[in-house]
Image (cartoon, rainbow, N blue to C red):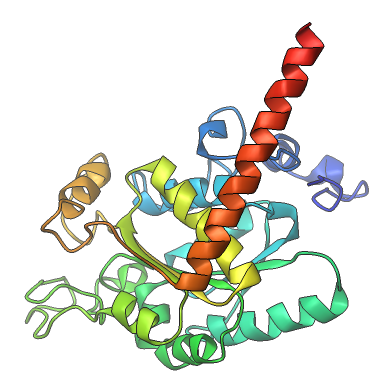
Amino acid sequence: MSKERIQISEALYDIMPSDYQDLVKSATYGKEDRGWKDIGNTKELIEQHSLCAGCPESMAFRYILASLPNPEDTVMVGSTGCTSLVFPMVAVHNIHSLFGNQNAIASGLKRALSVRFPGRVKDVVVLAGDGATVDIGLDMTLQAWFRQEKFTTICFDNELYANTGGQESGLMQKGFVAKMAPVGKLFDKVRLPEIARESGCHYVVNCTVSKPSLVEKVIRNAVHIAREIGPTYLQLYTPCILEIGKNSMEGLQEMRDSEKPTERFAYKEYVSEPAKQLLAELAAKDKERKAAAKQLAGQAQA
């Protein structure tokens, strides 16, 4: 990996904010074993982002950005919603699409990158909320999976339309009452992970972002599988603490409560047979690489 493609133009460097200069200088690009443990020593997201204080989405963004296996050759596709407020604050190439058509944009982008850069790995990752993924964009989400497009779709599931005041979404819990859904949800939460599996996704995970090591694992698995085999889907619970009546410091506990074995965000994972084989091969190669590095380190000390 290399930092060569993540640089600020020399002509503009002096007028860029210092925190943005630090973002580019201190990101973990170029490090083979980058991951969530680098957070704190590196910068993946500008501190003065526009998400609310204590928002779990800011946690999720940091974990995801720190876990991308190929960040300098990754393009993220976002959509209208809280996530769109953050993309200008990250040092990863990204595109803002219209509300709901993010998977259509990603389909064309992935194909164009493979033509424009033959022989070079270019990853595409979609990141959108439940409104864009399940409600307004469901058609394009499903069609990308049906076509076996090779990119990862991540849904930040906060179970309502948080960015516009708390309207009901398809992923809202049954019976939940929100500020702009006063009657309460009348039907069950749409089971999109099951739909993803039945629509051809090779790797599907439903979980919260309370455990950074888990987020790192599923992000890396999803991107690697999408790169080599076909579509992958991650549904990550990132509750809107304001819309569910929590204080800014209560988001983490809300996620922990929601991931208990009997709750709706208990960890669930589906891996297709080709994906299982790929992950086993990658694990074996990684083990060999670490063993060789350890041997070289021992020889150097001797």
